Image (cartoon, rainbow, N blue to C red; front, side, top):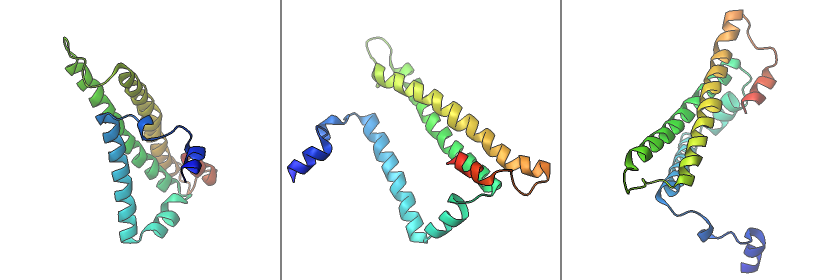
Length: 153
């Protein structure tokens, strides 16, 4: 058994992962929220409804709503990044170096910028365009609905 684990994972073991509170907290939060969503959908028996009505929809209004929901979730994530950056700047005074290493600070700074531009700014813009533009034009649908859905995913 250990032989197959070595072939499959190589040198990857539990010691290869970071063991600081920030990384662990992020992983625990993401896994917890994911499991809670899966449990809720299973308890309410909404998997078929979610697949048919939302995930495979070609309706531009539903795609616009999905863009906006993802953008708002990313706004929360980018906001948490911004709070961590400001807390690091506030706590690194004198001999104290704060709670983030310089490597973590640079990673969070880059991730914050990328998330806020590409996921929040562009996501909100595409969501509003999908919601409002067909209504303004008086069209029932957009020109290429499947391409619009693929563009979201």
